[in-house]
Length: 203
Image 1 (cartoon, rainbow, N blue to C red):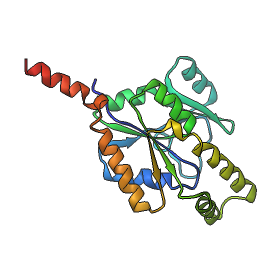
Image 2: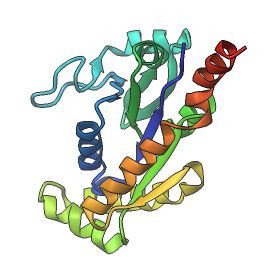
Image 3: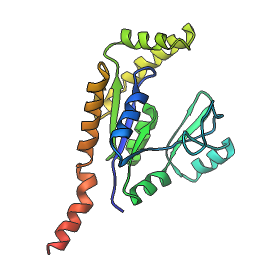
Image 4: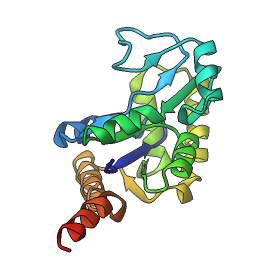
């Protein structure tokens, strides 16, 4: 089974990660979003199997016990995890996967799949990040301060990542992210099997 690209995208709330993810997915047809499993309730118009794979806690813990997750985390009392089967299925189908997870998940995923490419999306400065959070008009002051504190902590984990993308100008950040993905498509781990088969045919 030939390996594909595993592209991990992390970043604090308000940094524009979702917009960058959507733009990358639209521009690169081979890339698809990895759908995580979660025990949290659905929100709004969320669809099972599209936004998340929604399961109950007992099922999640059973999957965790049988080591079906490449990474998992407990966030605000709910469990989230990435199934190893989703990754293997994508590779069999010749697809690459994009992971929208936090730095804890990124660390675990890199331990299981060291060839994964991890990208940290960062704001140009914390003042800009605060302006973006306030501009949403949906969070209380307490929530905003908690998100800012979490952002500082997440940005301090930069050593986990292979690349850092500054999202100052969206179009430029989008181009940089596309270049990172395109380069990952030609990494040794992805091209190794193709090259080995090429050499075997030449014998």
